[in-house]
Length: 229
Ligand code: DC
Image 1 (tube, rainbow, N blue to C red):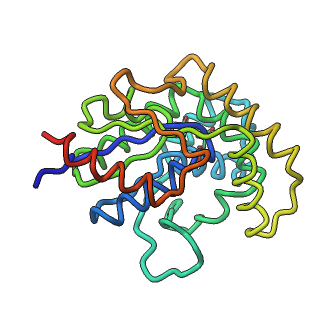
Image 2 (cartoon, rainbow, N blue to C red; image 1 turned 45 degrees about the vertical axis):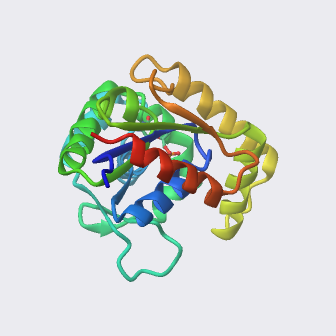
Image 3 (cartoon, rainbow, N blue to C red; image 1 turned 30 degrees about the vertical axis):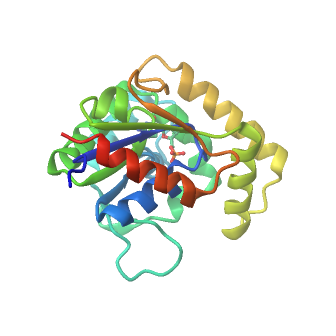
């Protein structure tokens, strides 16, 4: 039975792509690589170093210096899908803070930051057996991936999911603020000059608004067996 070495999943924030990507990786025994966490790690590093997030040169330099490592969660049983080490320190949950949310779209729009992260992502891709999730995986990072998916959901549903996540993490942000943030980030991610969010021409579109994750997983597993080489 043949399977794609790399499965590329793109889509807007809170579309369900991480949940589904993780389930898929588990089902196939693949590494789950959430590339958004890399841009979040750069953002956190800039905030921690008190670097002005508008200072593109300083942020880009920082992106080249820091060490980001993404690993399976091991025996950490706190709901994480993976562990992110920033310069050796576990920052998995700090990456989800409202401060990182606010600035990550800007920082991920810097071409020098993207260049650095893409190099890193391709190294994971070359090792194979990876489900890679992001915004530009099918279009830029792994354009030759045998299976490319573009996962979406309505903005209202995505805001509802993010609101639930926030509640679980103990952040009390109201729904309207989250919806406004989801729309603002869609706008930045889709309209930025470098590697904007869009489906690859040969990506398969999946809408998760009203479909349970388990059903979608089964559909993707079927696709995986027909999209390999
Ligand atoms: O998926 P996420 O919300 O964790 O992504 C955080 C930010 O990083 C988001 O603003 C889009 C950006 N991103 C990107 O530009 N390219 C990727 N491959 C992944 C994320």
